[in-house]
Length: 376
Image (cartoon, rainbow, N blue to C red):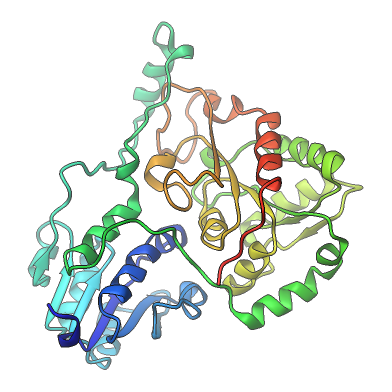
């Protein structure tokens, strides 16, 4: 398809925050391939702020929690797009674009969803699919002789999820060379957050973000006492200020961490920010120490270095930023069963417990020693 024959491109976004950030290189490449086309994107209402300031998207439409697929499809039909790029692998997302009457519909997946697509993009032969280990498998692996010396499973770097999305737009002739995920915070939110964190911003001291929660489950959470130990060490060495991130469910966790950091300059934003405000606050940080969760992807896409203890998940598959970017420090523990992709550890949590606070401190100091970068 020639660039000038495509008038209006519709993108069906994925529904999870971290996954949505990992689609941004593909969206940028799609814009590069079709510079004259109108680009409309549909996402869950909770993700609107992610896309409203994105340079590759012209129009953002959303669907509400619980909204039926027919209602969504009617709204999509009104856009009158001639090409749909369907990022999710769900049955519903393919059904929506078919019902909306978009003439060309590109996506990946298996039957029966593919009957709703005009163009199915086959998975790359080297594609690695995440597979949860069973509890019995984890216990067996941990109990094997010499298990304490067995390294965790590693995957090829080209198996990262962002390559999946790039292959979809590559089918349309877009360049599949990876770009770093890129986001731009909105100006109103940035101004408001700069004022809200004015004391720390004006201090001249580095502002370090701490994100101790993880919505997926406790298996992704580095122990809270390690967060506190690392923060106190960094404060002693740099005089830094801290800002705590998290959703409403993380408020008790943030309150506990605030108590542990008594005497230091700490501002908790847990449960107090919109997505736009979260992006603006992350962009003010010099480094963010975080679990593998949505704010990790946001910070990296905003140009902020992240330090991430990885336990039950794989940095090769879903790590932050561009795979291999040296600005980000992805720390792995010792566990033969990792990554297990389970929500809760069925054994002794050695994947996270084997990552000491001093490793996180050293990584954060390295990040602080590098020139600060900004997006925009």
